[in-house]
View 1: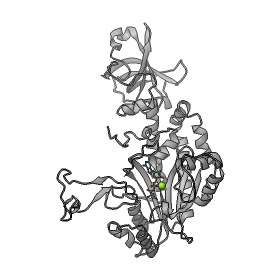
View 2: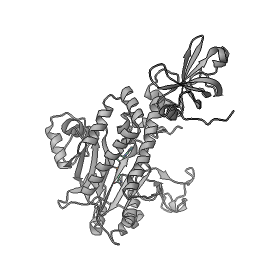
View 3: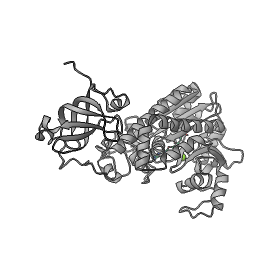
View 4: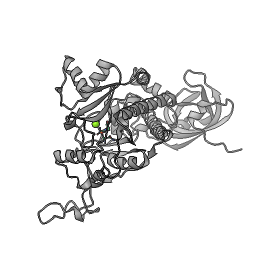
Amino acid sequence: MEKIRRTKIADVFKAPKFGSTVDVKGWVRTIRGNKYVNFIHINDGSTVHNLQIVADVEKFGIDFFKPITTGACIHVVGTLVESQGKGQNAEIQADSIEVYGTADPETYPLQKKGHSLEFLREIAYLRPRTNTFGAVFRIRHHMAYAIHKYFNDNGFYYFHTPIITASDAEGAGSMFQATTLDLNNVPRTETGEVDYSKDFFGGATNLTVSGQLEGELGAMALGAIYTFGPTFRAENSNTPRHLAEFWMIEPEMAFYDIHDNMDLAEDFLKYLIRYALEYCKDDIEFLCEHFDKELLDRLNAVVANDFVRLTYTEGVEILEKSGQKFEYPVYWGADLQSEHERYLVENHFKRPVILTDYPKEIKSFYMKQNEDGKTVRGMDVLFPKIGEIIGGSEREADYDKLVQRTKELNMNTDPIWWYMETRRFGTAPHAGFGLGFERLILFITGMTNIRDVIPFPRTPNNAEF
Ligand code: 4AD
Ligand code: MG
């Protein structure tokens, strides 16, 4: 007999050739049956929909089915027939079944009943095998691809910025050190400080918090670049929106001002949502049905409406006049909390908001300074359910102003001397922003905890798997 090739389950449903012989492989989600027939539902990760295998008990013998329990992996060859029941269009009448691997029902943690997301986090090594996480991680993949496609189609170059760096891009100081020094026997200088000249790189280094500074160098040569890589922040913030290791997309463009930057951010986000609606339809519908009934409406609303653009000062006025009780006080100069951001988006404007021109004290040193001496050309894009999804700015292109700002902040510019120099060699207006990849995935999937949109989350006290 001619050997037939394995078909992915998604392809079985896409164009079913009834009457043909198919070869499928997958993990058992459920098995139920009676004296005559067993119905085995399998999933191979290619779609959220399970494929039903119909197996004659007499043909295989009762004992044959004993090892075929939830979690086992099987290989089935059989005839594709039109499905009688509701649900999928096709099912398979099994001719042969091979068991690749069993999963002891006594110890396999994923039984068919619905598990809580909290429990599934504890077994992150198996949770991709659930419908929910299968859907989330497929969407995550498609979004990563769409990001590259968007930038490639629009003439941006993918620019790889380093993971290990000597600079603190955000000046926030919450960095993971990268060292090969023996922590039990740290070399010291004569004055008792750690002697980093003995360290691997001959100086202190850390994991990057942002690729922006090097990204700017790329933009000032290639015109428009983007980064897309992991970033690390050792903030001890145990919130549903923060990870210690997260992925960030950072476009940086020469000759863009803050308005061009906002136009790009809005167009980019709408493109990604439209892409998800087109290419992740089944998975989004599944998540909508099981977790968040308003998900589809919310996605469609963001695509359909213009984002509101207003200054931080105007935003704070609205919040002060709102009469709303917030946990954190709001006043001019305060760093806005997600409750404030969400009030503007969800209650006041009922659409995404781009806030601009923040007080310089609460933003990074590199943002372009406004004439008023108080605010900078920063912009945050605020989304429903999320709050800040993008942070960015027009950059300070003037050497003297940049130097003066770093002095006001008492910054040591030695590790970023090269960044400062670019303002002396062919400086130009430029701008960029950072999109938190996991925050985007939160929005697209309707999940509410950032730990549930990355396969293996890193948070304070947790680096398992
Ligand atoms: O606002 P942030 O800190 O901006 C920067 O890092 C700039 N260098 C970006 C730029 O202009 N090129 O971070 C950007 C985005 C935030 O808006 C948020 O979506 C996400 O990154 N983010 C986090 N996501 C998950 N966990 C964390 N701890 C995050 N911190 C920031
Ligand atoms: Mg920010």
